[in-house]
Image (cartoon, rainbow, N blue to C red; front, side):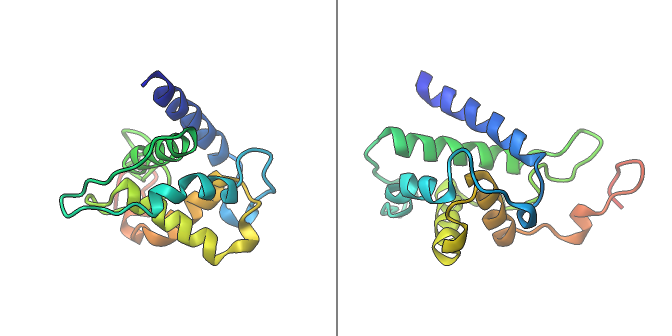
Length: 151
């Protein structure tokens, strides 16, 4: 369990660092985990058979643990506002309340498959691009007054 929290912490730090680099149109070649690397680590989760009750079986490995932890962080941060005074979603994506971590992983994996030219790019950029495409925010969510309040 300790390793899980370490992975989640490192992943959270990585995401905050990448958020300051720029948008998907300004993507740089990776000097960390690439989208293709992480996709390979997530393949067992993306292919897992999901039971009717939402459960699934998965053999735990370091790779699947990294994948699960990375997308746990994304899922948590996707529900977080920029600040108390600015309810804009921190990551710029607006998934429905019933969305699941496996759904996030499958969306990311499909995006990498459909954009193989981006496989060498930083994982964080590609994950955010894939999920932002899948779960765009409405203009109402994005628009704010100068006071940081929703219009």
